Amino acid sequence: MSRIVVCGVQTLFVSGGAEILVDTLATQLRLRGHQVDVVNLPYTDVPRTQILTTFLAWRNLNMERIHGNRVDLVIGTKFPSYAVHHRNKVVWLVHQHRQAYELFGTPWSDMHRMPDGRLFAWLVRRLDRWSLGESRRLFSISGNTAARLHRYNRLDAQPLYPPPKLAARLHCESYGDFVLAVGRFEPIKRFDLILQALRHTDPALKCVLAGDGPHRPHLERLAEDPALKGRVTFAGRVGDDDLVDLYARCLGVVYPPFDEDYGYVTVEAFLARKPVVSTDDAGGVLEFLEDSVNGFIGPPTPEGLGAALTRLWDHRRSARDMGECGFVRVQHISWDRVIDRLTETL
Image (cartoon, rainbow, N blue to C red; front, side, top):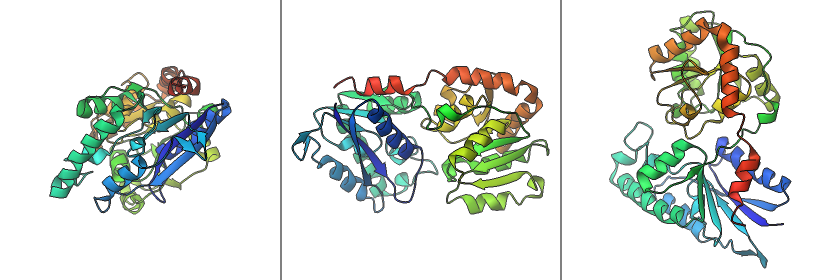
């Protein structure tokens, strides 16, 4: 039995895909007979000096022996947990500090606007090159994340897709009159684009938003548009049973984030045999989504995404066939392969 530490990062009072991944990974390792613990350190980048402080906090942890017991493997995930030092460090990269990389110069980062931001963006890239480069094995949760790592840090990672937490429960019951949108309500997930696009579709098409977050008041104001009256439902942060039910009954899933790392939602939709509608800049989503085969892709504008939703509505009799194509695309994703690769240095 090996002793393994999984390293996660906690943004206080926020829970999302990265947190689910860390907890599920620990559970799957335990099921295979390993002794596992999870170490989470809180993270903030305000003030900017906290970026370096939290990186050094991880670096200064003693992970070699705990109370005299040897730790056999340490698995880092997202920035800055992979700064941890260990003779057998493996990284399964969720994402880096995105504001210093692909979001630099976009509305989703402010680092390019201030001298200290530009300095810390440079520092983050240097620290990443060093700390990720010392890993014995370097994996990523998607091809998109691996491509960023190579583009900015000249390091190579092998994509290793994580199965969704609900994978075994997802199924299809029917193809209803609504599209489902799932996730945390924050600007980069672009739920506002979904509502703006819905105005350009048939009034019979409805939308259910499952999630919550700081962007909700803005979304609720958008939903007051007369063209959307009676068409938008805010389901809130639903439990697992309700989420499985929504996937089972929707016509399809609409998921247009900007340059997503991986996107559990896409895989969940396909496991429920539902087509997906997204945009041509959605990042990791496009590793699974193929236009007119298992869903539809449009430009990231209200008109463009609206046209893609209209194509789904007009071809709703083909939703089952597209959903089956999606299922075939993701059915091979399994925890057995993930665990085998992450623990191969033991």
